[in-house]
Length: 271
Image 1 (cartoon, rainbow, N blue to C red):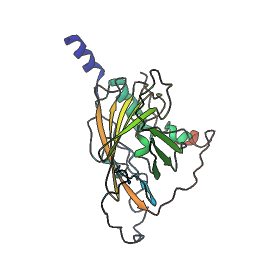
Image 2 (tube, rainbow, N blue to C red):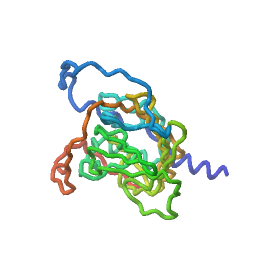
Image 3 (cartoon, rainbow, N blue to C red):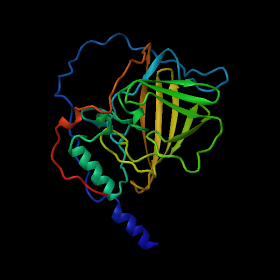
Image 4 (cartoon, rainbow, N blue to C red):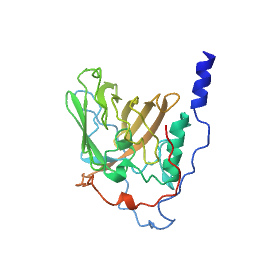
């Protein structure tokens, strides 16, 4: 037993996190223009006629930019709801630090590849949620994967799901919360823009709760024994934008721009 615990300790975090690379732009470059109008007043969270929470309406959910799912500030702007001490295994920490120090040069999103989950709930693209009797459908504006379907008909995961970017999801309601269990991931996606890695062992549990008419609380527990010593949980507060419509978004996988992205030279770690 002691030897087993010692092995985990040797594989776990043994070096400091790479430093936040700082804002995309210098202070003031965005300007401080006037508000587009008065902020809408939040009302009670709506419900469907059958009593289930209503995650839809005339508008869209807008996560904003939360580039690091484990930090409340990243690149000079608000990120996740709170700081998380991520229980990295040693190789995963080395990979994460390399991605930070090279300014996310190898980010799959920069190559027009899907970003997967939970990153969709932290990336700066609006989305809508459509609910039917037996499934929940997510429609995304960006990130090269425009939809996600979560069955809520009581089914279980397949015994051996094919690894995919989005994983195999099954959901159910717990009161006013939609709970989504996801397995069957590939190891190609990053958990966020900062570069938290994942492996095919990833298993996540998502919880969606509309706390009022303008607020969606998103919580996700990440259980990936291939990259982390124990499960960890993070969250994001997603705002409702009344009247917002999803726009057309085009990204081509054979793009030519990411090869010219500048990065700080750093040796690439290996598992």
